[in-house]
Length: 306
Image (cartoon, rainbow, N blue to C red):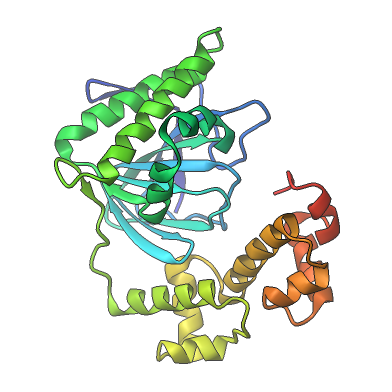
C-alpha cells in the first residue's frame, strides 16, 4: 500500500492547520538538528517497506486509525490517542489497520537535547518510560497534548534567536506531561496491550526468547519448536507479524549487543563475536561491515557511526 506524506502540522484548539514545509522523519537527525516533528497519513493496510531504527528518540502519537507496532521484542496494538516512546537503536516495524486510513505525528529528538531535563528531573522518569513505552491518553486530555505538539511544530520551523530555547521548552513540557501520566491512573491510564491472538502471543514469545538468548545457538528449528510450530509456518508467521525475517532479527539483536560491547569493553573482536552468539568471527566481521559500513575495529574507534 502507498503512503501519503503530509507536512508538519500545527494543532490549535483541536483543528489541524498545514504549514508550508515538510520534513522527512525516517532519516537520522542532521548535525545541529535537535528536534524534528512530522505528521503523516497512512493508507489502509500500509506496511513499512524496510526495517527501521535510528540513533535518536522518537515519540509516536496516533491521531486516528489503528496500527500494530513490533518494538524490540513486543507487539503493541495502538489506537487513536496512543503514545509510544521508541528508544535510540530500537528496531521497530509498523503495520497500519486494513479497514481505515490512519494518521500519526512523530517527534524525533536527540539524546543530548535532554541534558538539562536530566539535571533538573533526574533519570527515573525516562527509565520508567522505557520500561513502559506505551501510553493511552484519555480523550479529554488529548487537546492539551496536541496543543503542545502544535507549538513545537511552529518552533521547529522558526530560525530566530528564540527557536532553540522554545523547542527545548515545549519538548520538556511534552515529556513531563507523558512522564506524569506514566504514574497516574486517572485521568490518564497506562496503555494496556490489546488482547492478542494465540498466533501473536506465540510469535512475541519467540521474539523475547531470541532477545534474551541471543548468545546461545538459535536455529530456526529450535525456536519454532519452542512455540509449537513447524519451521516453515513459524518463519512465515514471524515475518508477517514482526516485519522481519527470522535470521535478520537474530542478527540484528546480536549486532546491537556486539556494538555495545565494542564501545564499553576491552574484549577482542573474536571475544565479542563469541559472547554474542557468532561461532565464526570472520562471519561476524563480514556481517558487521555489511550492516555498519565499517569493520568492528574501525567502529570501536568511531562510535558516532550508526
